[in-house]
Length: 265
Picture: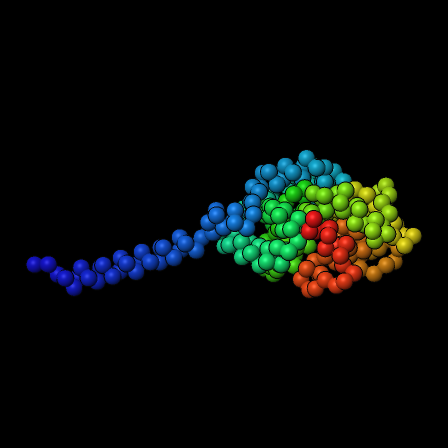
């Protein structure tokens, strides 16, 4: 004799677990989520090789190495190699959601909007966990996902844009009276992968930052010319990344046409 109650109960249990499974499957970031938002994930090996090939670590001075807790250049290379990791599924979904929000802000600025999003992940042992860029890729650490925001993504994408269009970028800087000069290689300058390899004069002063005496982290810096806010003012690449980000998040005014043209055409 068939026990219909037993079959019904088991059927309902089966349907319940099937629904849970389907919800989990469809909540996972799909490849088409990446393509729709122009997102690419760079694997740890390729991300590390980019840094090695562009020679960034070879520029480290003694303070750069001390802050990163490595003894020499080769030790620093090993440190970096060990601290590239994969994004989790949840982190990938966070990136998709953030990029969707960010793209809504950028869609009016065609040239910047069309630049692909390329991401890779490190631990916070790399560059104090600060977001930064190398070539065409944004490097994010664990720390970013503790306090993620679209402002950081816009700022870093502007750095990618500066690298992608150096001639166009220099033209903008000239419009704001920045004079490009050869880099002054002092012994205590902070390595910053977001900047180009030149210095700039503005209002008669050469702009660059140096570590404070006995610095113990990447934020422990000062401007060589005593101007405020070493992070924003050390180089036009940083100054305009902050400025343009604030304009995109907030509002542009009638004096901003040069900047609007720079990121639009």
